[in-house]
Image (cartoon, rainbow, N blue to C red; front, side, top):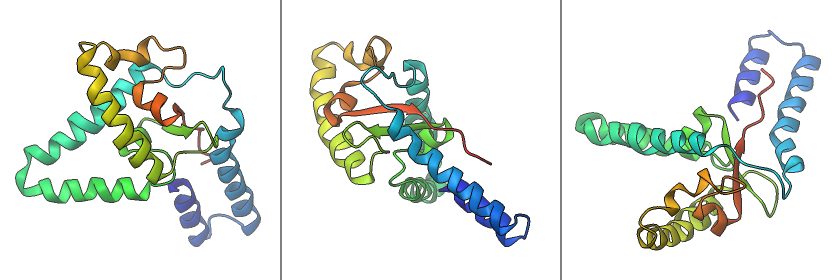
Length: 170
């Protein structure tokens, strides 16, 4: 989405010919959906450390700033929600966008939609994780470090995989 906006700006500023704009636009769209063609049973998601980094960024840095700064807190949380909504359909949270990670729906092979990210991954997967993590003395929280596909419990429940986002054209 951001790549297409940047490309649109370049076109509006007359920095690209119409032919070059179309060529790059098609390449961006092909790259965006090329992930779906390359996901198979043997494919592995991003490492446990990369996932841990995204979790830290989302929950301890982005969200903590909103709680630690009461005056700006509401503005920042609203900003995070708006940012998350602009990423809807891309299978990304703000931290995953910053770290080039995408959540892929293994049923469709495409980036997970906002509804499935919220419903299956967030609510149902979160509920299962909430029950199983304490029962296993938090060992299962580190599942991406030993799972053969680097999936955690909510990935298994929602049939998803976190992969590296294809590089953008621009």
